[in-house]
Length: 210
Length: 210
Image 1 (cartoon, helix red, strand yellow):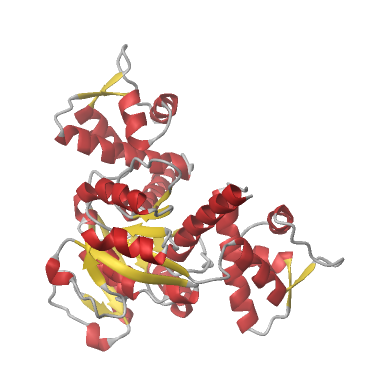
Image 2 (image 1 turned 180 degrees about the horizontal axis):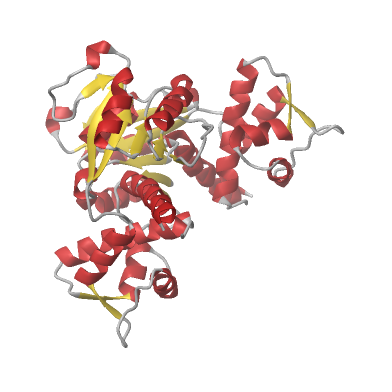
């Protein structure tokens, strides 16, 4: 089992680049093309692919269609992945409407909240009471959850998801959650990402002044 | 100039943890406390701090107030940072309403879009035509921008921001942008983050079966 997160992120990026190149009429690509598209060295592309047993032909080229198929298999994209969201605040709402997920084979199956004024059972994506998560997740055998609730509720929602049988979580709450068992938690912290940009801008300005 | 992104992210996390600990009444903390709070080793905490000249007392403790102040100075948080957003779609909208930024000293000053039905000059956060970005950014000397426009518009918006004098960008469009000059671009790709969770969940399941 490969557990290098950066490598997996690169595979996703290659795949996205390949979809774009295919839309432009590309039938074959070289490691240089993919390297340029995602900003790494060609040797990195070849190394990543060989790690998963993907090899090009003698001239180093890859067939676009076959490469997309192989990457989708590695990334578990052969079938649509169902995902639930906890928390219909600003972020939860944006994720529900976000069109990028569908084309990546991700389907938001339901959203759960504690605010009864938000419930809507008959929407395309139903909004349900948090108490119904367990039944819903078990019936549909959903493995992936997104936490978009306020800080103070995030840990209890993670515990609830764990108890439901969720195996992987994308967490938007800006704190570290205690995960138990074999659940995978990936954190996205928007403030930190923005602070990071600000730090590097400030550092550049200071360098110029001094 | 320190250019290690992970280190800066850890500094932000320490700072967030410190605010939480201070709210709980902590006056002093030890590297072990901060290590537990963000999930690293205590030696990592001490190393990160010593890199920026922050040292504890003989017993290894740090005063919470003074530590927060030092971290804020390092992270450029002494003053409110003004930020503009390009694109008032789902993500742009969520960012405009997101309360997490304000308490981090980040202020969204305006949002720019090409859709005239979205304009509102008199809102708390004005929504303005994209053509007015240059004048606005220059007048207010804004250095930080967020790109939340569709893929196909992202590169031209980055070019526009660069021409306006923006120095750091947080990009939500799921493709690699070509940055010119000394502009810093940090990418947040929500599909990739979710795919990453899915990959590791699938990998775990395969391991169990085999």
